[in-house]
Length: 326
Image (cartoon, rainbow, N blue to C red; front, side, top):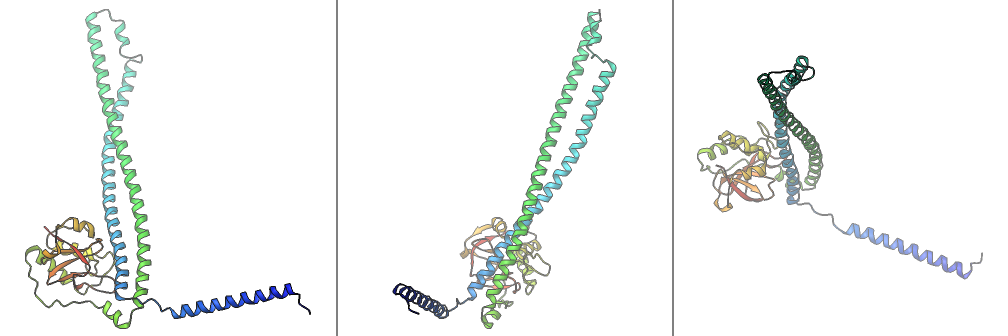
């Protein structure tokens, strides 16, 4: 079959295009094979778990808010119940007074005075009517105040109930985020060498020196030391598993000091000091308020680190803020 010049040119162009695509594809494949996989470092894994802990502390904060909101709802409900008693009593008293008045004088008490020919009787009766109307006006005014207060309390209750539902939804969302980030962190951990994985999951339980502390600081440190080896668990507040802020809260509770549940508020509850002024018993924090530990001296901190590790000693790396309790 004879090929016309036009068809020959089209065929030639098609073959050239196919060859170019093939060459480009081969180059991409070679390039992809030649580019080395990104190496995951211990620092990368530490940051991955750190991101999970940051979300976990957000959940801790939301749970504390939920606890407070539930208490506010209980208090408002009790207040509403008490006000309802007064509201019903005032309403019933006013209803009875109105009914009685109409029974005694269907056309109103003033009508009885119109037929009186005694001026003194008329004036005495008029005074009694005015007193009765004044009493009823006071009762109505008091009833109005009670009804308004009750309406306000019910509005506050509705607002707190809406806030509770929102916070509960946010907790559920954050928990899903924790699971997702935790799986990603575990996947990165699995990319480390066996030696690095072993080092990453090994907790340092030996201090090597005596802690020089006294009073509440000493008691808090002793409590934390008694938990050495207990596993880290998100949201853990003991007695056998801990997260960072849960351990700090319970350690100082054992020393007679009430600290908030969450890292940020714990920092706010302390007297802020420089890292250079640290003494045993002081609290040390990450700058983003996602982690906290108790300083024990000589550059060492006792803390609950992350899943896979236990309550342990660590260095000051990562900690950049400090606070003194009391």
